[in-house]
Length: 262
Image (cartoon, rainbow, N blue to C red):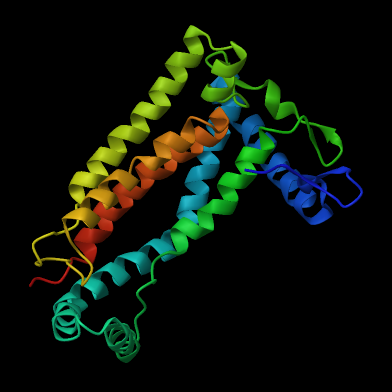
C-alpha cells in the first residue's frame, strides 16, 4: 500500500499528510487510544490489541445491514440460476446477446449481479486506516504512541515479513503471527467447505459455474492469509477477526435466507 508519491519538483510527498486524510487518521488514532484506555483494566498490556479487536467488532456490527443485503442477493441469484443457465444454453454462441439478456433478467427482477459487494468494499478503507496507524511514527503532527504497544512482546506495528527481512523475528514473533495466521487459514478452509460453489449445474450454480471457477473461488479464501504476512500485526488481527465474523454471519444468514432449491 503506497505511502508516498513524488511530485514534479522531485520532492517526496506523504499522502497521509494530506489534511483530510490526516484528520481521519487522527480521529481513528484517538478512537483506538480511547478504547485502549478503556480496556486496559481488563486487558493490561494487550489493551491496544484488544482495542483493534473491539474496533473490528464495531465495524462489522455497523455493516450488518449490508451483510443481510448480501445474503438476500445470494438468495436472489440462486432463484435466478435456472433461468440464467437456460439463457446460457440458448445464447451460448452469441456472447453479446447472452450478456444483454442476462442484464435484462436482472433488471426485470430488480436485482443486480453485483449486489452484496458492499461489506467487502466498505472494509477496505478500515484496513487501510489500521495499516497506516501502525506504520507512521507521527499522526497529524504528534507522536504515534500506538507503535510502542505490543501483544505478547510483539509490536503491533511489526509485520512478519518485515521482521524476517530485518532479522528482528523472535520466538514471540513466530508464535503470535502463527496464531493469527492459523485462525485465518482455518476459517478460510471452513468457509471453502461450507460455501463451496456447485459444479454440477444444480444448487446455486450460475451460467459461469464450473470446476475451474470452483477451484479459483476456493483458493481465493486463502489470499487473506498471504496479505496478513505483509501488514502490521494490528492489521493482521483485524483480518483474523473479520474473517471469523464473516464466516459466522454467513452461516446464520444462510439459515435465515436459504438458497432456492432446484
